[in-house]
Length: 291
Image (cartoon, rainbow, N blue to C red; front, side, top):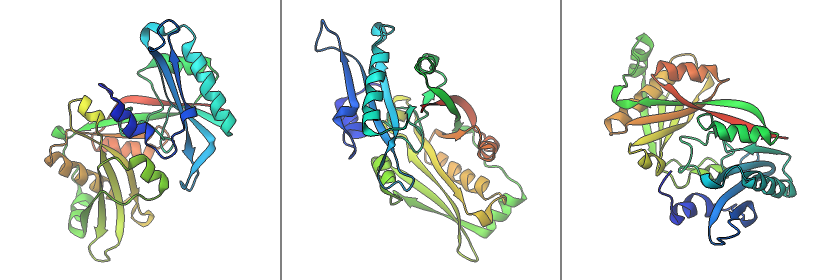
């Protein structure tokens, strides 16, 4: 996002408890020593239990070079330095760009509802990492839905769920683990939970966050849909459609203009759900890795 400030960088990168100075590398102009012409920032993903960093999984969180200094080998040297740092720390695989759950820095000022790896709409970035030996491992669809035109689907199952269930809102839900606290502690979140009227059993939940300050630079009020979980015994019964539909309807009534979600192309169930709800693809994220 632009404009950028030192305060925003402090908020979304430097204040993280695992920030390490050695992972941030700057490139200067030899003739103008106070002019930064590029930088790269590397970090790590979490262990499977999300209790601490996994030093074997390295992330090139962000790398940028001023346009007038590109194609001079600066990007290549920055990448070499970052890879050297990660390998020294023990990384066995390095990803180009953050993606869920490997998003240690910059969520909220780059990407969207999640970090998308390398955006397909920026082909130079993808071409650069391919020339550096990175292989594309996954593709993520970036989906959006404009709530001004949203209408929840209506069928017999949706009507029955409206009668037999209740939806409750949890504002600023407690982080589920250490990594969740580190990556989302700055954001306003809301969780919609659906319960069966008779048994009071939780059937599922969906969590969304206010995409600030990134959405402010788009001049819209936008939220990101990050977690949708339906209990196994309630799947294939229209619960996800009803729950997400009600969440979007209520958010639209509160003046939210757009909802974004990111889904791997292999998750056909989720893609069909979002298509049914009126989401359309706006971009794609490419996940590049070097082993």
